Length: 253
Image 1 (tube, one colour):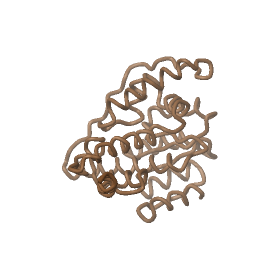
Image 2: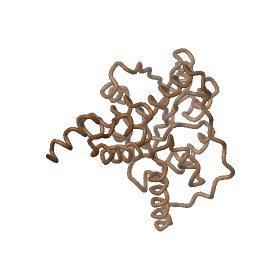
Image 3: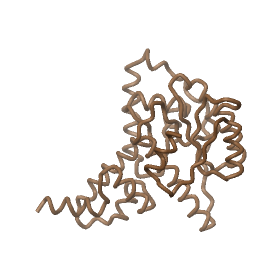
């Protein structure tokens, strides 16, 4: 109920929210209402979150599944790798993380719908080979710093592309669940929220050019829908891209 209130606060009537008391009810609701986004805890009565998500994935291969879990659930969450979850939100979930992941989910749905209208098929990423052994981060602080720098380099090199948490996890040769925990420990936020802020910071720099087109900047920082870009920009920067560009040049005069 609290989560539903937070979603209503940010997305208003643009979302229809259904609530389920357990995993079995969640599966039934998804089948009946054709839900496009699912936020799922892992520890639930009747049917746990991973089992419910597996059933939902069999019903709908495109459903955006987001796990909401605690650190001590992560060894269990590894079963979710094959489900291709969009992200793992860790309790306690920050407001910005929730909003960023939901915006990403909505953006992916809109993009998929646009492709369907154009009768285009979306290419699915190829499965990689065996994952690297996952070290105990508590015992290897040096490795944590090295991992953080490798992730930063990957984002700097690829932020303008359509990348996801799963892409970054594969780059590190780690499972989705382990990578999410690693990222949280390195950056104190989840991958989606970090990537959104990185992209918007780059957009701010590009918008310092008074001749910069908002649509062009949107494409350059990895957002292929200018309207979606504007929503994310306004949430993070407090104003829309055009206002930011104009205010920057007004202040500079």
